Amino acid sequence: MQGTIRPPALSPAITRRLDTVVPANLLMDCRWEALRLVREASKAVLGKAAPSPSAMMAWCVTRTMEQHAGFRRLVNKDGIIHELTDFDLGVAVALAGDRLGTAAITLANKLGWTDFVAAYGRAIEETRAGRVGEVQAPLNISSLGAFGVENATPIVVPPAMSTLFIGAAHEKMIKDSGIVYPMEVVTLSLTFDHRVVNGAGAAAFMMELKKQFENFKLPG
Image 1 (cartoon, rainbow, N blue to C red):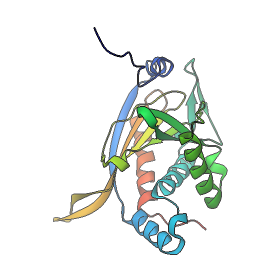
Image 2 (image 1 turned 90 degrees about the vertical axis):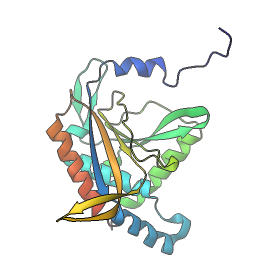
Image 3 (image 1 turned 180 degrees about the horizontal axis):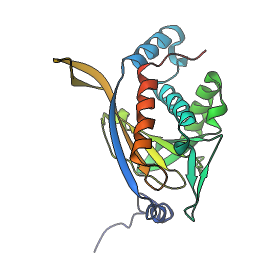
């Protein structure tokens, strides 16, 4: 066979970790209006310095993890589950050549809003610049919103116990009290390790996250 040998998209070290995961997935739509309005108001005042929607959503995820202990757990190589009090948050970052890195917001739950936004931006930029290291985050956020992707099923790579895919904002027809109308939503797709939490625990996490998104206001 003629051609060029290329490395796999996922390294063998990562692929081996996948063998231990018992994956399950939940989908949920949530209203986008609150986040969009905060973003627009922030841009009108701060311009390019306004916090990104991604940073706002990461903040919501962190607050939700605080309330749901199952999503503050790591799974080591022996399958032992460790529950954390303070935790990092991982964010998937697309790199050149279809490579993937994960940025880590260290001790995300201990940061106030201003420090969180700064740490988020710094972690993303450092990862894009090639500073890719081992991430010890219970949950990783993934998104292909820049490509217009509305929904996907992410994978979970231990020691993380979950990956949250956040889709691009889009309109969806909603039926409420017999009335059908369009609403701007984002679809949340959560893949979690069933060894760590059950479906009800994951659903409760998603319901709280939906609440955080739909009622978002700038902290402070």
